[in-house]
Image 1 (cartoon, rainbow, N blue to C red):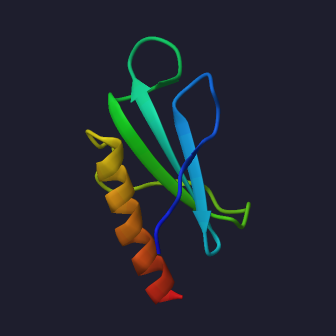
Image 2: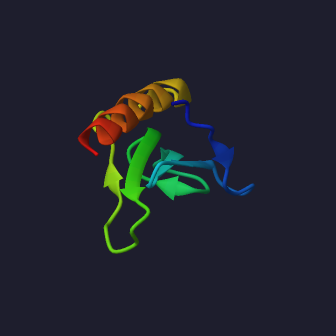
Length: 84
């Protein structure tokens, strides 16, 4: 199942997608400038659409590219679906 990310805001680099009962977010972080601050790179996080559960960072974050984050999400979603 392919995830289709959409830009969530025009001001900072954040993209979101959802599938099954999960929400996925990709953000571009840096130590300086506008936007989210953290270790430089593309950070991937996910959460259940059940709002009582916190978001979790995808293993391997931050990634060097958006494509690497997408690939990690595809593998994660496949495991989540298999676990039911």
